[in-house]
Image (cartoon, rainbow, N blue to C red; front, side, top):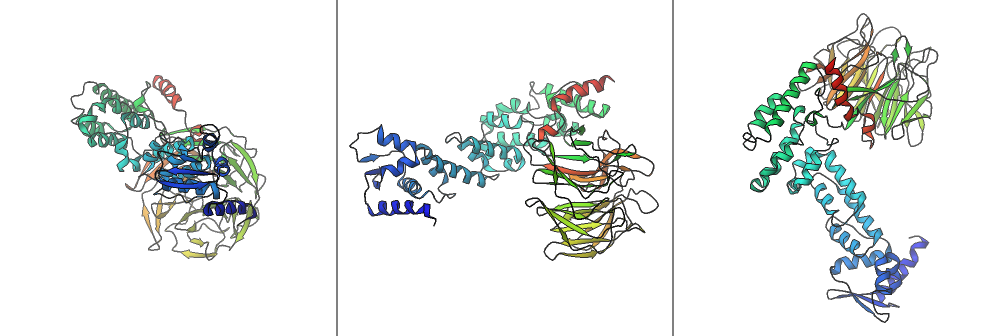
Length: 578
């Protein structure tokens, strides 16, 4: 106990012994002896009660609407400054603290509830803030509902939403759903809970579903044939508009309809993919493009990165993007720059021990790892890692192989690095680093030699994609199963490429740009592991290879980096006229 805690302890001892107490708080049939000055200190309610709302000679103060247990906790908090908040007492304690205007205790209860948020209780906590208002808790609980909507729908509390609450939630651009059909199915579940009372709300709720983001087949089978909707004349135009919009999108290969239609307005993504730097038109570039997976659109991000770089690595950590190493035609960098996404400003971070062009970069457990590369003289087997909290790099054990132009990822608390070039040949060897032992371990080699490779962890496997085998740029891809220490072939990309960006977003593996053996590319495609198929995505605007990609998530201003929703209608109107 510190010195400043001692007076509280003394006052509490006096209270427990009944010494110098000058008032009694009565709750139901329980009396609490207290010192007025102590309660006045913790709440303006008690200052008003003792000074203005009662006779100056009053000694006993009856407080209705509370339980003795809650009054006991509030008095203990007034004397000690601490209280044991639990799942069992938090709501009643918060109501009591709010009633008596014990502001610090209200804050403590709200913080506790904020930490307890989960799909099962977030709606209840959000609705509770209407009774006991806390703007911060209300915002946090509502944000949780929006961000975890599909999980929340499966919980009991979802069925307690009012029609207005549900309508407002599903109308939001930032509602997090993998498929728009989830929103429609959530509506049906909510109605089915009290069908007679709620079936009349189907029209207003359906108008919030962006039906054109589903498919014509889904609308025919699951929407138009639903007994609540099949004879609904008000909903008929919605189906017609949605089907026409889908037809237009397929015909014109566009993301949304030629005429603005709320049914086709993409939801905001929960994460975005950034393509940073690279080699374009014979020179390194500092251009950054952002891919909005929901809109299937790239947009240029205005940035003031002072130095173009290629053959670098990027990492997203703690809301910041780090650009690590690389080359600008003149210099091989050991420098690291950091982009603060909240302000869109760049800052220098601590430099690496080694200059690293063709570097492999990944993130594990709060550290950025930078491995191998080329320092202008030698292909490197050294590796180091960066801790943002201390802004320091530290060397780790060197790899078994010299590797430049390799690629790395993390899976199951290990750092994997595969392929690359050792100065003499393209490599098919692979190894992983374990932070607990600070050791590298060789694993089964890939089926192909791959330099300028893309490596990414996805669906509990390590995927090795594309690259250069010493003769050709590759389309092929293979996947490593760490449980069996074996590689197996998966479907080949649509386009051969090396020195491209690779990331997973929306549970799909994206490859971006690169060199196809003849020219630098702006082509983008993605792989679905469940179907083992590659599909085309929207092309970038900048032709580039030797770029680096990273996925950004969990930032509050993500809408600033996505394709503007209100621009989609204008853009598509122009496209449809071309």
